[in-house]
Amino acid sequence: GENVEQHPSTLSVQEGDSAVIKCTYSDSASNYFPWYKQELGKRPQLIIDIRSNVGEKKDQRIAVTLNKTAKHFSLHITETQPEDSAVYFCAAHLMDSGYALNFGKGTSLLVTP
Amino acid sequence: DVKVTQSSRYLVKRTGEKVFLECVQDMDHENMFWYRQDPGLGLRLIYFSYDVKMKEKGDIPEGYSVSREKKERFSLILESASTNQTSMYLCASCPYPAGDDEQFFGPGTRLTVL
Image 1 (cartoon, helix red, strand yellow):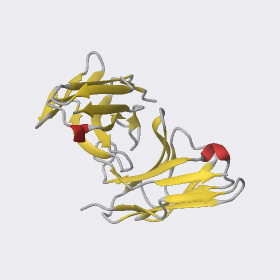
Image 2 (cartoon, one colour):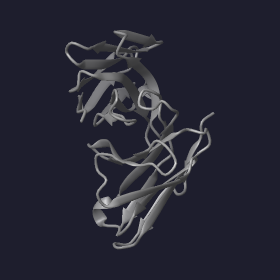
Image 3 (cartoon, chains in turn cyan, purple):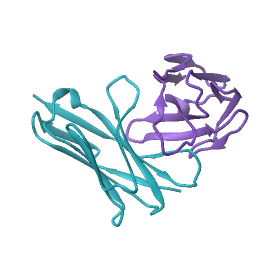
């Protein structure tokens, strides 16, 4: 099945700096790549996603890039704020594999004031 | 607004007990999922269902079973709970066609097996 690797496992940045989280996937037929944010004690929530026919997508301070050749995708958060502190999960969906997502192990982001 | 609810936020059970975790969604989604979340291991898929009475094994189905008798309800069953099943359990749902669409998560059930 699909294998999703996520790095780093922890990331600490100062408020205002940028944060980048990277994920790689194994199956070139993967077609959908969402990112979820999970604040402490809360449920994961989708923050941005990208499909395989697009190379980049941006929503205010967050952006996702996809490199299909290299089979990796990244989450970029600019002008980080303390409320960005959370665990972030990337995921990949393999077309025609069924209805499930394969998640990375998560990145714990800490933004210090 | 999609709402996914789980029957308990915290549950404490003893080894060998049969445990039922219930999940209900109110948006008429075809697809429902059960994950367990452990520190450093991320979200691991236990089982999912794409229709009533249909189920598919995920990555870690051993020791678990599921039931989907109604579209809105997806139950996770631990036939004989063991201490290594102590974990956070998350339910999720998403509309058809699934896989390439947002999954909506429940609040989670933190299960402790003594």
